[in-house]
Image 1 (cartoon, helix red, strand yellow):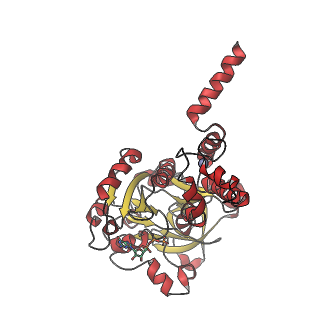
Image 2: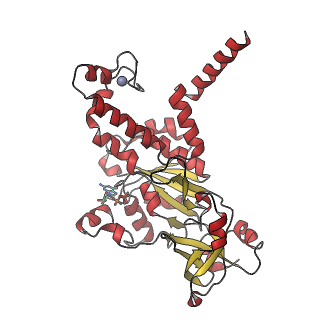
Image 3: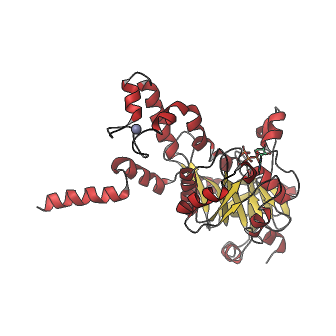
Length: 358
Ligand SMILES: Nc1nc2c(ncn2[C@@H]2O[C@H](COP(=O)(O)OP(=O)(O)OP(=O)(O)O)[C@@H](O)[C@H]2O)c(=O)[nH]1
Ligand SMILES: [Zn+2]
């Protein structure tokens, strides 16, 4: 096997697949820009674009090459111009999300990830529902999730949080860590196999870049603090979307992956008032419809909360719960919305059948 590409995660599976394409060369996508890709071939990095035929035959956005994909290109020497990507090899896993502004079109964020590090901080960001959502996304991608709890130094009830977490983590490895004293960093390293590809997801500011920098042994990513000081910001500077770790292992960190989190985090902030009222509803999963003891409806009736504000909260909430979910999850979401839950849906369907068979 080509030892150079092996460092970039090449396995026998892909090498075998590649033999189907005579005369073309194997490469892995390391960066994606609008129409231009960076790929790593057996002789190093080169620019690439997709062939007209591939673009033409690719109706589904999902099948466009994404960072992490293994592809077949027409050359290994960039001196003769951009390489042309002719085929995308079958993926072992894929992280996808709804394309911005559309409900139906799905987009690949990254491909062929072995492990997804779901990062959540042990202070403000700690939220079991959020973990559940990320776990669903991770399982759906076919990669293995690992939960990384960050900022342990800012938490004084670690054991309690770990206990709470165990009710939703269901056998997934959990690692607590802190950048303060590098607590837990050894355990994180132990979760990274040789030539395995890792992706980091989680809310903004939980410390993903901090961990990646530590793994790299140098500051390759600007952490939030640095970015705030630098008004040009991270978005204008180019950065690597696929990083080789010095200890083996590969990190994929695409802009799309960072965006996966934006919406989950912000709702509570912008609607703190409603969430505060809702916390007092009789039922913790109150939908603020016709349930007894709903404090949100009461606040609206009492003129303490405007109906409009509540409506926009609900609307945003619906959009948020769609963001980042793929079609199968979306289907489940719709079922949940219509029937409350799958169990309830089954009940309803059963009642319906019973009635019709009578
Ligand atoms: N106290 C404490 N602060 C931390 C820890 N890890 C990271 N931070 C701080 O948290 C802030 C955000 O960290 P980042 O690594 O930039 O977070 P991020 O998840 O990469 O954020 P995005 O790039 O926006 O997705 C920085 O100011 C870090 O110094 C930790 O373990 N303990
Ligand atoms: Zn309510």
